[in-house]
Image 1 (cartoon, rainbow, N blue to C red):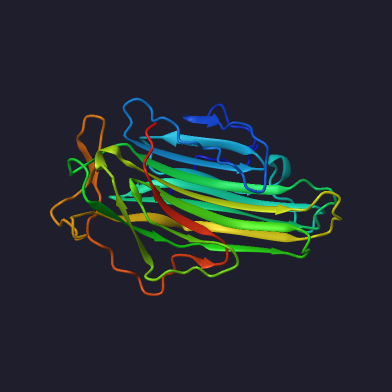
Image 2 (cartoon, rainbow, N blue to C red):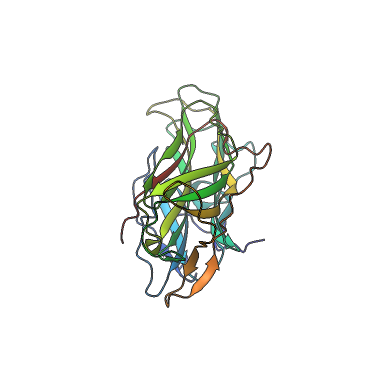
Length: 313
C-alpha cells in the first residue's frame, strides 16, 4: 500500500513544519466552487517530473510537491470541524469526512487518484458552508522519442469513479463533481455535467491532440469537489452526504504518435527524460483493449477531459 504523507490527526488548516517538502497553500475564502489551491508551480531546478497532491476543507490546507518520491499521497482518513477527528454518530451538528489525493507511476503508466467526501447529520442552524476538495497533478516537462511536432498524437486514458449527493432538505445545495484534464497541444474534449449518466463507450477513452511537440511535455490533473451549503438564516436539523470518489484512478494507458493519415507510427516509442536528457521510462504505445463492463464515469455529476496547449511555466 502507498505510504501516506498526510496525518488525519493534524489540523487541516496547518501544514506540519516537520514534514519534508510540504508547504502551506495560500489562505483563500471558501466557496461552493473552490478555486484550486495548487496552481501550476515551476518545477524545482533539475526536475523533469513533478507530482503534486493537495487537499482542503473550507479553505486550502496543504500540498506536497516532489520529483523523486513515487507515489506522493495525502490521506486524511477522517476529519471534522476544527481539524478534529470524527465525533460519535448521533452527535448534534455531526460532520465526518475523508480526503485523499495521490499521484504516482506504475511502470510507464502515470496515475492520479482523488477522493472528497463527507456526511452531515442534524446540522446546526447558521452552520457555515461545508466544502472540501482533493487535487492531484503530474507535470512531465520533457518527452523524448520524437523530434519536432508530429501531425497528431493519441493519449489513451482509463478512468472510473462514483459521484453522489443527497440531502434531507431541498433548501440545502449539495454538490459533488470531478474534473480530469490533459494539457498537451490542442484537440477535442469530452464533457458531461448535470443530473445525467455520462458513460461513454468504450471504457478506454482516447484523446487526439495536434500541435503538440513532445519535448514540451504534458500536464495531467484530477480534482474532486464536494459541498453542502445552507442559505443564510436557514433552519438547522438537515442531513447531507456528498461523495466524489475517484480512488479507482485516472490512468494514462498509452501514447501513440500518429502520421498524416491518423495511423500510429509503430516504431515510435515516447520516453520521459531526466534533466540530462536520458530516458527515465517508456510510455506504452499499444492501444489498450477496453475492459468489458468498466465504466469511464458512473452515477451522476460532472466530468471533463480536456486537451489544451501546454503553457510554459
